[in-house]
Length: 424
Image 1 (spheres, rainbow, N blue to C red):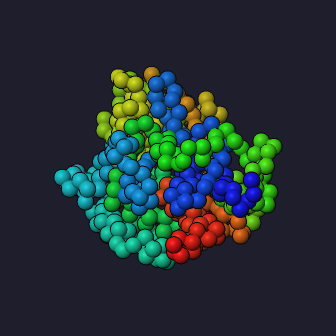
Image 2: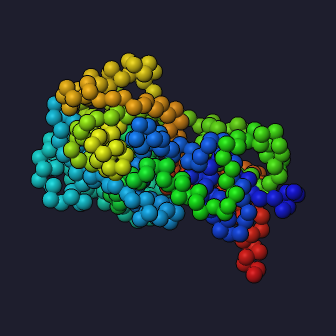
C-alpha cells in the first residue's frame, strides 16, 4: 500500500488518540490506531478485582468539561455523582464544606464548619464567580502565577489554605506545594462549579470504551506496540505499515521516544490504595480531605457510594490516595495508611481487606508557571508527523480530548481534506 492511499496511523489508544481517530474518520479520512495494551484507554483504566471495579488511581469524570459534553453520550454512562464540596478532616472530626451555590440549604453548616473564616468563604465565592466568568480562552489569557502565591495575593489566609485549598488542590495537581499554574486552578474551579464530578457505573474505562465503539470496524488494533516511526510509516511487530501521516498519541514522556524534538516533560505521580470494607465508613458520596496531615493519605472517597456497581452487594470500596510515590514498600505504606484511617474511622479499618495498590508514576503532566503559555501547544511536528495528548493542552480529560480534536484538524488540513471539502 502506498502512503498516498494508506490510512493515518495513530500511535496510542488513550482518550486523546481515540478522539483524534473519531474526528478524522468522521471527516472521511481512514485511520488505523495502534495500541500496545490489550484494551484502549491509556491511563483511563478500570480493572475487576474480586467483584470490585478499581480505576487506575483516583479519577473522576467532570460533566462540565466542554469536550466531555461534545464527545461523550453521558446518559449512556449511568453516572453517579459526588456531593459538591468535601468533608474536611480537621482537629479530630469531619467538617462539611459544601458549595453554597450548589447546596444553598447547607450554607449555615458550611459557614459554621470552621474550615475557614467568613472572609475567606466570601473570597471563595468571588473566586467561583471569577473562574466561571467569560470563555475558556479568556481564562487562559489571564496572567498566571504559582497557585499558592496567587491565593495569598487574593487575600486568602493560611488557615483557609491549610484546611481546604492545600488538600483539595493537591488532589487535582498531584503536588502538595501548589506550584502549579493559577490557570490550572481557575480551570479546575470553573468546571467543578459548573458541573458534577462523577463516576460511570462501569468505571472510568467506560469512557474510552464508548469512544472506541465509534470507530469503524478494524480501525483499532490492540496488543500492537509500535517499535519505531520510519518516514511515512511505522514498524509494528517487525512489519512495516505505511501511513499517510502519523499521530503520536502517547503520554508526554513516551512521545519523546518517537518525537525527540518534543520538550522534556515531567509528571506528577499518585499512589492509590483500594480496600474492601463491610460498610461505607463515610456515609455519603463525598470526597474526604485531610487537613491534619497526620499520615500519607491526602484524600479519600468511597466510589461505591457514588456508583454502587463499583462493589459487590453488601460491601463497600474505599479508595485512599497519596500524593506522589512515597517510596516505601507496599507493606510499610499499608501500615501507615491503616494507622491514619483508624484515627478517622476507628477499629473497623483493621478489618478492611487490601485489594490493590496502584502506583501511577505518570499520572499528570506537571503544569508550572510558563508551561501553560500557551495553553494549547502545537500539535504538528513535521509535514506528516503530529502529536496529541494532555501534554499538548490543559492537563485533564478535557485537554486530552481537545488535543485529539486539534490534531485531527491539523492532519486533515495537511492532507488537503479541508480544501477538498470546501471545493465540493
